[in-house]
Image 1 (cartoon, rainbow, N blue to C red):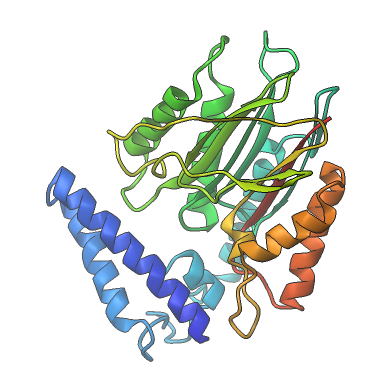
Image 2 (spheres, helix red, strand yellow; image 1 turned 30 degrees about the horizontal axis):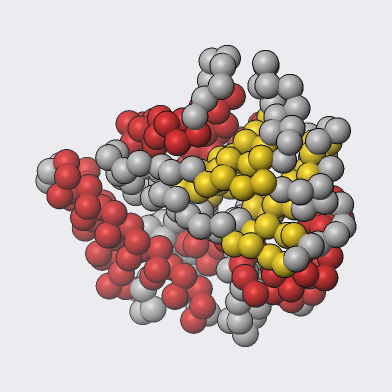
Length: 327
């Protein structure tokens, strides 16, 4: 197993242990929490040794991409019959089609805003959340969201669908974004395991270029202006971790032609075979070079630059990009 893969798995497990310990401190020593904590500690003790990633049935190696999606995975697919494997592939294919149907129109264009996104799961389904929508009674206002559920695979994709349903089921009327994200936070706290959470950016752009945004622990959005770049700060913790933290709102105004970039860490943390990371500085370089392009072409330039950087190396994480430009 590559050193970079071991480091990524170890980081995931340490993060899970920290959140489980916090949950035990808040909720108490419940059996399920203590069992999960024991499993995480045991996995941390095996990472990097010959015992880690070995299937308990056939004693063969579990694939690295499967371990990255779930570091506690104890089996490969060896114990499934051909029929069971075919049924599993069918179900995953159906889950992928359902998830892709939840995505918005990739080109959301109006007299005020030009938007385009790229959504690339690392496997059959994704834990990334990418959304664009409008609301009755708010003509010309564009809502947007970008999120990243912890982990990968089916469990993460279910929570992504949960977030999509929450935001699209809000009653008519204008909602303050901070309290809206607080309600999404409570939803995840009440309906998911302590090992799962989500980073999230939710925003609203109106007809005169004013943008409101809440960033719950997500990658800092970048703003391209003719005079340079601006990085927007995080305004709260990821959702699904704590129930007593406020979510503050950032406000800015985009002039005609200026653009906002949102992305998941599948962009900045993408790594080449030698372990080098793509990084935020390279994203900023692309924005400086192509910031005047329309939303579709700016997304394309970012994706092409990432592909050139990777040089054929496969991605191990979901990737989402969203550009919103004021017309």
